[in-house]
Image (tube, rainbow, N blue to C red):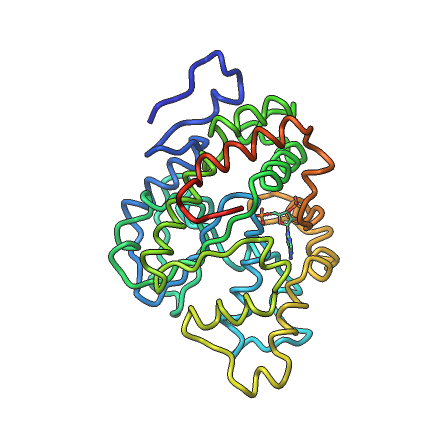
Length: 304
Ligand code: A3P
């Protein structure tokens, strides 16, 4: 684990590089404990994402989709009383924190976990088993703006600087939580191309534009496709509506509640739109970020 040189200031002094990616010490400890102890099952489902790419949204969707047989969408649905982060825990941020080793063996299959762990740092059993990974990313301009807003709101020293310019420079150099952003995305992209049965690669923008098609595609990938009857009953539209930004962000639990880890639920719902970067980034910043993205993704077939 190498730490950043001192001249990068107080933010950098809170980030460490582990297996090619930057993270606060707490996260690195979580990843290490997870790598050493987590045992994947073939039936496990992992939601993997870059931070601020819509993880909260996809948690809601996957939870609802996978549990739809025994958790019908009605006024008792767990999403109406719980923030998605309390329903789908992060492996390295919730379950394996502070060197704790949780007993996950009693959980019913299919178990659903979330993680931001980079592809090559995933626990070995995840690579070796036939579990499934649903990967979500978002264009880097909106991802960066969302990350910066989130860090400021929660005053997370470890996640970013208070100045947009400083945070932007670091993001561009790959120094952001779970960064370099482009390496994180590319590793999963390549795996999804090589093993489409193992990794489903999703984009926030595409989910916003085609929510129903994406739902259908996720269900098929996970081996729990919607039946003709479910389609006819409008189940896809119901799930999409339940998990929509408008619905989730206006629920009492998400307006006033807190996560068990202490963060305010409302911090995970800001604008929920594509293209908010236009309100925050200068033309020069946009050009720089677009250039880095083009350069990093060139030849991969991936566009964000
Ligand atoms: P903005 O800051 O651009 O609004 P994550 O869940 O990975 O932390 O990402 C948070 C981003 O996803 C925030 O983006 C948040 O508003 C947005 N988001 C949260 N719930 C959403 C939903 N149901 N639909 C669309 N976007 C959502």
